[in-house]
Length: 383
Image (cartoon, rainbow, N blue to C red; front, side):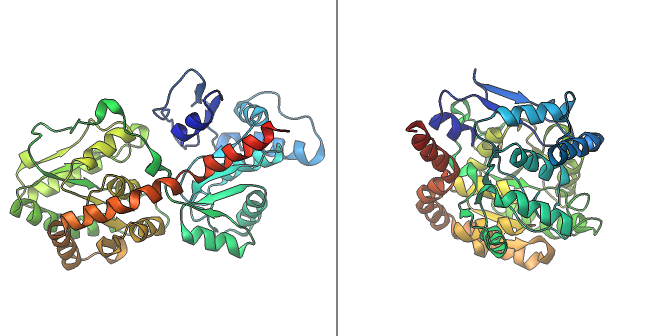
């Protein structure tokens, strides 16, 4: 998204306001006209100020003069355009009130937020849905899932349907030939595991992580040993959200299941999305429990097995022609995993050619929001 904005608007100032429940590092996009406001996170402690702000808008009180929320409001008020960067179902099953507040502020300040290929849906909270519908009606909506489009249609909204923004991401030129490997001649499986039962609304506290480990690892070990493949575990989360202890548990279990300790590693050098993409690019195939592991595999024409935890992964498998290589994590079983891994190896060249044939269309669909904003700006310039 950042690359698209800068390409179409080379002289524009870009101000990033981050949304996270923990301290956050800026995305790896920097130039003289870009600022990253990592200090403007909103937390529960800011709720009193949020209520004061909403009252000021409703009843004409004096708005806030200081505080983090006021700084957020000021930046939004001064902006020519407000873009909601791609994210999961914060408006939807995650029911993220602070995220919704940010978008509401933009609407109340007279802006028309542009949702940049997000996942959007309904939550189970009536009040949340009421406010969400209010802000979404006053926004320009681009979604990356057909399911989101259908849910918004049921609210009388007409979003445009694209695909994930990452299909437009340019590689870091310094990393194009980097393989993050001690032995660059060794073929490997890129494996992207993650935790679910400590955070996800559908899998919290139900032992899904243990079940997946018991189901997946033995089958991957068999394939790796039979085909002389190493395994590289890719960290999906970094910084304050990193899962290093959990990834070590996976590594130890692979070794316990019979994989030589020299054949498996956690790629600790992965610090950015560019690093992440490179490890997948050079893999024999990928096995991913995360959405962007699947997206990068499609983008790099790498065969993959998607262990899907949400609809967005299923839809990515659908438009990439890889639905035969998807397993929903709630339905995972050893026979299915073994059969699909075998299929990835047997159909390697066919899969790569099929993925390559779709990339031009996917790239175009991933740039719809900024193309639309650019077209709108051309007409504004004529007024």
